[in-house]
Image (cartoon, rainbow, N blue to C red):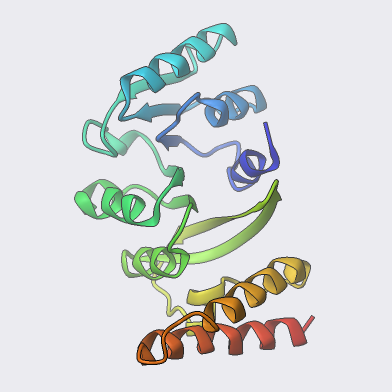
Length: 216
């Protein structure tokens, strides 16, 4: 497994009862089972992907540890048997739609481990509004991409603007902050002058990024 998937596992405790939504090849639940987690459910909306996951689970002799389910998000899932959700490798809108579709299914879920392909500020804000507190984040650089893994624990909190936009400050993330700063400076040079709201949004990101970098 690459560092991106390992970062998901780092946020899971051995006692956590985990549903991996959009499991794809089931690499995460297989790794968790080998580590010692005993309550695991791997789900996917795509039958072909789930069949590959089932084959991988059987190959590793873990079919008695990892259950599987064909499901669109949490539609066919009894969440009362679990306390942790892993959702990774999807767009932010898809992740939020899954969590918002039936909020009653989140009542017993104490931990969310999220890795969104995009829209990180929206994901942070939306999950905070669902009654979870952003506890930790980890930035992983794989190839040409940066991946941000986020851990949310149940509890009310107020998300500051800078954390919503850029995540929890971490001195080890300097390279990532500099990457974002270059991205937003380049983007600012390309935005039409009449899009004042967008320009203000970009400038706010640049302001907070400079503050983050200066504090390292």
